[in-house]
Length: 197
Image 1: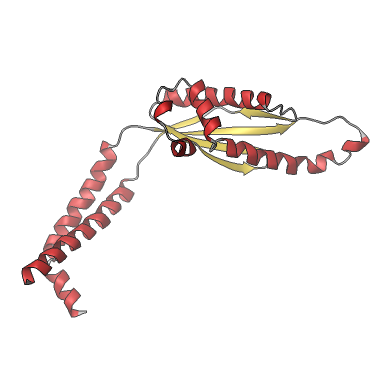
Image 2 (image 1 turned 135 degrees about the horizontal axis):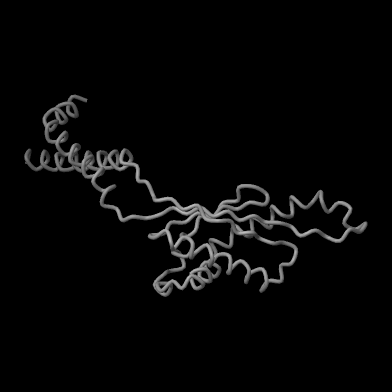
């Protein structure tokens, strides 16, 4: 224990300087990051009413469960490369050929928030692109429903909520401090090892 105490006492000034520099760089990074926008889009899934016959006596009872299951399918579309590629094609994105299969899975973050509600979040460089992608999502959903002959459900695409991304300087500063401290200890350790030799 005394070894570690002597080590940190010996290099305390050096580590403090490194930590201060790391924290300052962490804050500076928040100002150097490119401008971007967070987009939240709500999808409302509605089950079309069935004919009023004896066969459908319990239709209302199962409607919520059926809608929830379909909502899970809709959620999965946004991490399915072919659907995401279709959305980007409808949005006239020019860099589609440069994307890997893994990239397609990370563009949208879908979440089923209720039996008939799905939220889709994504990030764009320009606010206008958020609106363009919303229109493209609407077109792709319409095409998907038609091509798969899904007639029991309709999906309403809401207006996107677009806000400029706010980077937390405390988070970046803390990250810079931790990284700088680790680097400082490594440098001091290497110096101590070779100095003793």
